[in-house]
Length: 120
Image 1 (tube, rainbow, N blue to C red):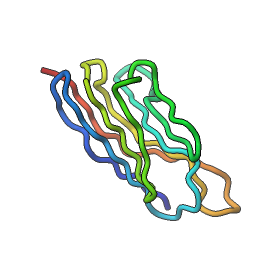
Image 2 (image 1 turned 180 degrees about the vertical axis):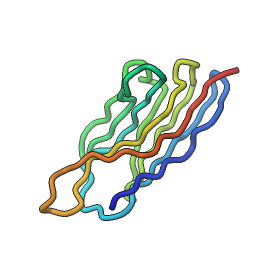
Image 3 (image 1 turned 90 degrees about the vertical axis):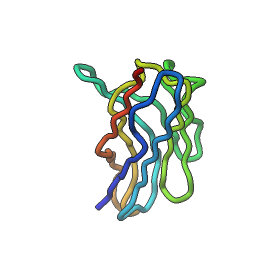
């Protein structure tokens, strides 16, 4: 079993900052990529930022220069968000693609989601 546990969401004023974290645990052999998606009511879930193993990071155009995705060596991914705007509001989901053993194919896993609200 694989679990993704997110933390760090909340209410923040425009221009403020938040840092989200997501820890992956369980039967993990290899992680290919980790990242964050955002969903607002009535819209599809969209990629915010991702960090593949050994590769360069990817960001949605709307967050470039304001958000930073990073990953440590303990299977935790972070999303540092600064200069937050009301349009950044949404449920943020952690995402990872990993293998639980060398003989299993890569599979995608999702966290439970954490609410970020940017409002005065």
